[in-house]
Image (cartoon, rainbow over all chains, first blue to last red; front, top):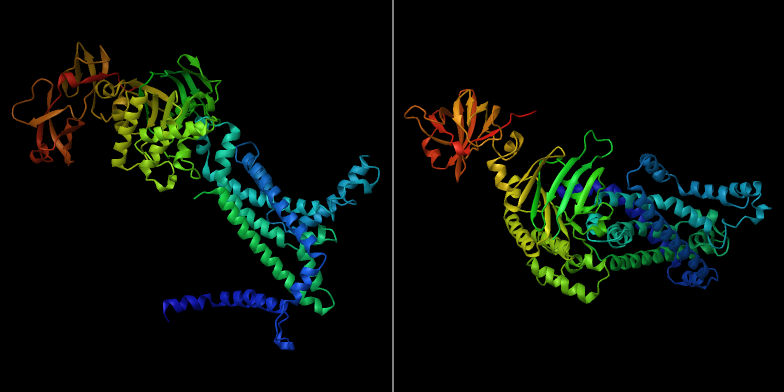
Length: 286
Length: 353
């Protein structure tokens, strides 16, 4: 057996899984969304399911909610992550403890975070009860609606809690590998602290920060569980809508569920491409 | 034109056993090139950062033209630092890099553009303003960094090992360029190096440091002719040391008595030093005369333009550098006669420790 074949033979199991699960699953999904299922006699593909989705009154509000949550969560996480990384790169007492606490929630799953938010911020949650207990509010219902609310505060809180350390760890690593010398040069050339941040630190960390935040953007756009637990019922986010259709007892809802899933993937892909193109223009770096 | 005075300058880092810079007194005359020379960890880079204002001294004072600058932050001190690595901002063009100091001072676009062209002309890189730093060679990048440092006409130019990242041939060019530009702008320049050759070639005065302490400040030739101590003599390549007792311009040593009019010690214990290139040697013919002694070649290295010999005399070894011709004549094991010219001998106090 030649070297080349050996490599292919060794790669075969991984390729098989990849093709069967990813390409195969995706192909079946696309087929299903196009009402193409030869096994039950549907051999003429059409766009009926897509039409049905786009005609749903909930589709556009859901898309708007989805975009709002993804963009706000990513932007807020990015700003907070950069701020905390800048604070944490300096040497200070208790830095190791801080670094540990900072990255503590990296391995904690989103579902745990979402339940935590629910327990803390719901109108029946711990903070509301505490506020009631100390007399800040006279009834638990006076506590601001932060969970299952129209502004998706609970969802954004959960994402920010989880993604600030994720982006922050990357930014911190970049800052530490850059060292202080670029800023020292700028300082002796006359740059004020703000100018050093805006014209030296920010442009230097931007490429890495944007690459990691695009992952956050794509994730927060496509995530189901967190909006399912913390989101409002109408308009639900697109993934919640898709699962709702998929689990409908009416099997006729399966093709639109598939069509919606494919649409989510497409929109997500377009967003990532746009974001990368935009960030490349912003950064202009090598 | 700015004179820089350091007085009692001390910098201690928390947790360190001894200060990185220890009560440094140094007067750096206006418009000259000064080298801070020493092995790594001797405190020379800390001194540079203290002058720049990037570090705050533990005690002592830094004065520019007689006025203390300790209260002036680095961004307004007018002491520009250039690092070993060019540290050009990779996301800016060459022109934007050079014009950076004017940009942060909110100068107009037109002023910046014309000053940038002027500076690029000065460092012999005209017309490269629109390039990216990564498109330039290492030597060109370093020259852009120099232009960036000089565009605001700093009071003091600080260079941290400016040549050590360059290849040997580029180093000569850069050295010449720094000297030429410095002479043209007459900016007081302080540069840090561990390479005594580089310090000697580039600087008007050298401050030799070791362990945070200043060993000697002088013009380069003084370090060769009249080093202040055995340690300084060693750092400048003088390894020939012969202990003795001096009196009346003579020193009595285990190898005989030598006439030595040049001395820091008038009487008592002293160390005779003589540079390897100052010792003359010849074949043994007659018995040794005044300031001469007999020896034997231990080993020698032919180095093209010269030859290095190691010669034993009694219990002592001497390093001798001769012209390359000698390597054809004297072989290992040959008996030779060494001559120490009296005017080349320099007597120092014994090594204190």
